[in-house]
View 1 (cartoon, rainbow, N blue to C red):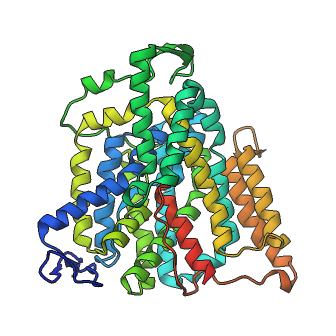
View 2: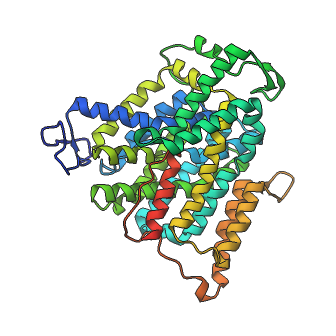
View 3: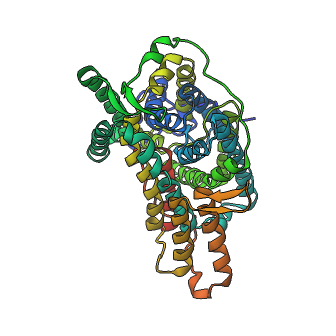
Length: 475
């Protein structure tokens, strides 16, 4: 059985010939391949660093399981789809909502585990019926609206939890991050969010040394004097050790909040596979279902031990575009580095110490970017919002999601926010479509062939949803 772990040496293994690319089944010399693997780790590190912190999960375990997920993905796709799977930012809002309802880390991972199972089943359906099934269920108007309400539903988390802990650090971090996103180029632009975190981290340390403690809302939600940056846990942490594993618990209310993110994950994976196929000049449509299923399996395995879900990363598409090296051997090296990071508790303690004010400045931009990716899906797919068939379900669902509107069915069961908004968008669109006159039903196919544009921005994994939807709807 060909598992895609045999690579031919490309040329002399040193430098690709002018205009040539290193294909997925080729490699450079092993030292160069390992170096490229390290570059892929750095590229994905920004989002994978931020996501577990925002979700309240162990960052060491998140990085370790991203390496495991990448290995699973490479084996499942037989080495034909070069990709790194890192912690998905799509679930940040889900985690915030579940915790606001009294859920624990186990509740979060349990809900996301169910999403991983559903994603796996969606992949099987795509393998069986073809990629067109995605368009039938999730046309661009639906996908864009769901991504938008997922992002904008997060606004109260920033406003009420992070920003009040240190408003001036939050403001300065926001300004620095904004400048980094807009002004930096190349590799640095792809880690702009990470650079904003580093800036805020350092700024908090300097302010503690110069101004002393701050009197504000602390991480525990109580007002008092506290340090902006508490590094006491770093000193107690070991250099070598396993991350904290825990099992999931399942609550229907949490599962219903998390399920809508399946739509964003399908969009991310489809966009990633399409982009890689066009970059390498190889049709990978037959691997789309496999890629989606592999992502689902990897997320199930990660959440089963207490880690976050994973998704394909657009940042690594940028690395491949810049280097023209698509070798899956480099991703195996990247996975190895991630596993090593996972067994360093001191690294995890440094990540966990990120001040709340810093997260406030970062999330103001990050959450907004996630939401606006939904608008970008509409723009790239030429969605006509003058068409009431598009306008009505999207408008209703977004307001429900952003406003966290609740619909109570009994004293113990209700739907609200992301879950209710997504349900309204999907069922509303298809119900209205069943009764709409023919002239309102004209839609462009989601997966037409065409020239793609690659999103290599610093918005983490959701860049895949952006670029992918643009490719599929615009052709």
